Image (cartoon, rainbow, N blue to C red; front, top):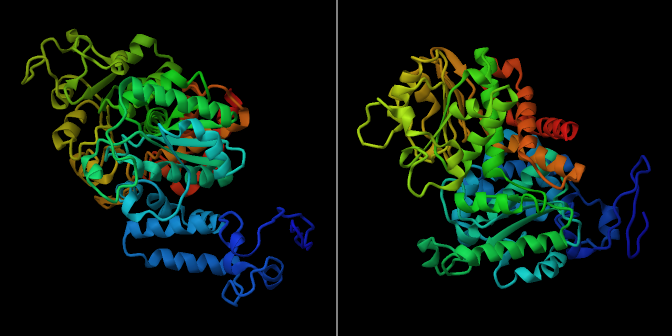
Length: 538
């Protein structure tokens, strides 16, 4: 080992380690370099750490056991989340090693559903700075802010304005928990180094009155920017990203449905960017449907789809199903004819006043409902649609807990012996139906996947594994492929490729257990498979 301004050493095989100039408490406070109690006696002497750590040197395995005990001792999910975030902020190597060993146990803690609660309590639970907080006042200083933040080449950015956080809506500056969690999954799944990841909260205010009334709220206490003011801010933000992070992929996350579509369409040709709520959700759902088709021994074109909930995620699902149908040989019109979307006003018709632009491509002619009996003139509910049309796939993206009823499932069983019922909304309280209920209503015949994590369900002596349609199976691979390929545009076709790659990761054993998705513990291999498929395609 050479001691000086830069400290170098080699392992037993002669491999050089990273040069380090930090010593003492500065080194202990660097989350990427800190080894904590695993610093050897020689290292403690060289790095001026004598007396700054407990005397006993621990192995990495000792440390893993200790922090896992600490995690397990936390009494609630939010306390477990805070424990992991604190570990991430002081020792990232240990944090990711722990996650890698306990993926299935910890993924629901660092991301959905627990991260939603963490966003709600952000201002009251704030611990340590991570990421950039960009406002209307400082957006022009992003270059200087970035230099203070890292000084490393940023390869992936996740940015949110926090207006559409999961199923809980506007969380103001507290939405920063989402980019932090997403980027943790990029590292866990795709191996992207944390130093190349940048979480950004776009603080444009909040319309959450509870936050505005809270003296502890850490964001700007004013109503949200809207209209042209908001658009100008986003334009300035994108300009700064292009200038200071020219090689970065930008992931838009948890914007309102209208802003989500606007930002995606306005800037997808300006820099490599995508919206996970739209494209990632659609991609993972298509993969699940493809798996269910294998289970039924049917093709995608044999199905008719209802998307219940026409927000960003719902229309993203429709877009990806449409792309899959085209890939399977459908014409454009035939593919559209197979997809029905419903929002709070029922089935979306093309002659509706004030119809959102992004819904128009799946809006139906009134002619399709001619002769249908409906309770309210001009409105077709989910029940009425299912009573009049042979739907085989029901996809829930509404955020309305309990929206799917026994009558819906039983009516679908008149059209197909094995209906696909995917209640995809997060968090669990917003799930359109519980898996156990769906199995009871269908006598165990429905094919079920959810957006939130659920435990296994036993019905009639068979234990069903509930596959989770988690976007984490998609976005790390898409991001990695985009970085490696240096693509200038992330396309819908890339997400279609990701869907088929994910579907191929589902084994016959998975299907036999009732799941149309792989185990979350296989995240790393799935992410690499998805990335390779995209790289081979583009």
